[in-house]
Length: 263
Length: 150
Image (cartoon, each protein chain N blue to C red):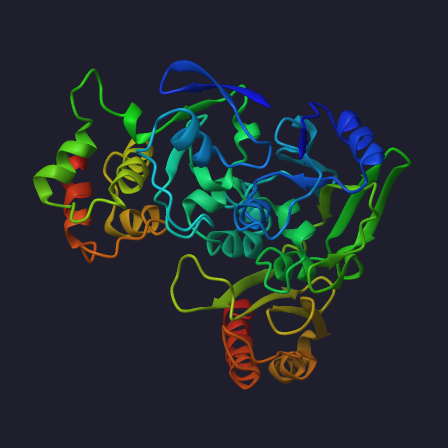
């Protein structure tokens, strides 16, 4: 086993091109668990901690560019938390302070778990994923990037460089069901935004299908949203809950989310 | 592979396996068993340390990622043999039963109080939400945090 330690994005992309099987590691909150339990033993680990270009966030005109190394703790801080409030709420439900200090938005995308907490808030805001390689940079809509449980559309030589999102400015919220407030993998989760500019309500649910799902309806048909969500979800029975419970809970969350977003 | 880490203010070197955690390196290579190894998946907080001043689970940091960085473990909190105020408060409040979770809780509490000297009840609970204790029921631990904050 070998650890590569690039110090610039260019070096990182070069390393990924030379070692397409290398497993990128940023916060380590997913990758380290697999290593610690010997579930995975990659030949090469690509440590992204030293790549400054992946850190922080910036604003270009109306669009935010969140570096893939942006931590949940950073996503909870103003002014970013005011621009993407549902993402901030979701970030606050992730793990514990220790996990939020290390875990990153890019890692959530890379893992592409159906339960990824950052995914629903980014989906309702129409986020795009910026994928970089030595061949160049391309953007993929987040809903196309998530192709299956723990599968994403990144090519082997690509790294997740950033997430781009133009905040709608609409009232939004994120809710998550679990046995306690901390250290919870979502039994199910829901993000909703009331986008008044487009006259549209968008909802995205997590842990209720192979990928986080996205539905929308006109603002003046708000009452139909809970049913839309429940019908679009395809949950399964697993250790965290039953499909029936998840469906029921999603309907409850959607009604509560509407109260918050249309208030 | 060889890593160089500033641990508790001292420059240390260690030969590590590329896939091992900072926790393993601290305990098995650097002779610092204060950080406890329990869940190895970030659930319990027993291995809480400060990495470049940020509270993290050492089990979720690749040892190689700490190369060139600063780590403070529970062993580094005491000043010249004098207990850190948080350690004193844990002793005084009786916040220790079996003691396994104590190092992680002490480090997490020290981190909280460094950021917020007078935390609210909710802030205390949130700050310690990543540290599990299976003995105390947490009440004495919260007493210790309030005592240390005074």
